[in-house]
Image (cartoon, rainbow, N blue to C red; front, side):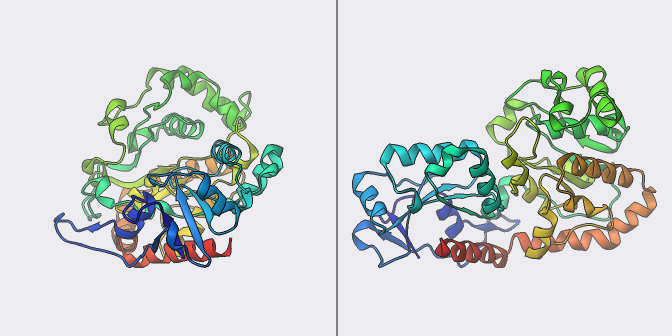
Length: 400
C-alpha cells in the first residue's frame, strides 16, 4: 500500500500521527513507538497498484489537473481524510463539491471518517438524498481517536480504593438535545447531588433549554416522561444553566482536551455523552452514526463509564478487548436501536447506581471495577490495539 505525496517530507496529518505519535510515560520523558509504517511515494514513483492520494485533515497534498488525470485513469485513488467528523450529509456535500469542481471519477474517491458504521450510514444517505447517487463513492471508517496522544487529556490518575465525594462526572460542552434531556433528568430525579455536571452551550446559548428539545428528540411533550422533562427544563433548568464546573466556555474553546484531575479523583464513574445521537430534526441517516471520540477515550484511560451515543458501542469495545461494567450498569441499553428508548435506559441505569447502597457500591468498585479500569488503560495505551485498528483499516482499504 502506497500513500502518494507531493514531496516525500510533506506533512500527512492524521497518518503522521498514526505512524509516529508517542505514548508518553508518566514522567513525560521516555516513550515508545508502535510499529505502523506509512509507505510514502512521490508521483514520479507510483506503485503498480494500491496507490492512495490523501487529502484534508492536515495533509499538505494539493490537487491539480495532473493528479486528477492519474486518479481518473485509475492509477491512484483519492483518499479524503476526515478523521474528526462523521459520515453525514454535511461531509458528503464537501466530497460532492470537490468531485464536481475537479470533474473526478467518483468511483476513484474514498471518504474516510471516524464513523465505524460507514457502510450502513452511506446506504441511508443514498436513500435520503438522490443528489449523492449521481456520484457514487467508496466509504471507510476508522477508530481514529485511539491515535490521539493521551497526554492531551492531562495527567489522568488511575482509580484508587479511596472513597469519593461523587458517584459520577458528566461533561457537556455543546448543549445538544440528548445532553439537555439527560442533564434535565438528572436534576429532576434529584441525581444531580451525586455528580459533577457541566452544560456549557458551546456553539449556542442557554436559551436552548427553552427551545423544545424534548419534542425534537421524539418524546410526547404533552404526557409522560416527555411532559415532565419539558416542564422541568422550562421552569427549573432555565434558572440553572449554564452549568460551569471549573472551566468557562472561553477556556474550553481554546482547548477542550484537558480534564480536571480532581474531578476524576473525586468521582467513581464517567457519563460519556458522545458527539452524535439522532433527533427528529436530523436526517434518518444519523440513526446509524457510530463513533468514539476523545470523550470516550478520556474515560477509557481512567474511569468506568456508561455510554450515551450510538447503539452497539459496548459490543465493539468488547470485541477490541476492552472491559465494560455490567456490575454497575444494566448494559442492555447498548442493544436498543430506538434512540429515545436507549436514552431512557441510560438514565434509568444511572439512577439505579446512584441509589445503590454506598457500602455495596464501594465494595463492587474496589473488588471488580478497579482491575477492569487498569486493564482498559493498559490496552488503550498499548501498541497492540493501535496496530490492530491500523491493520483492519488497511485491509478494508485494499478491498475498496
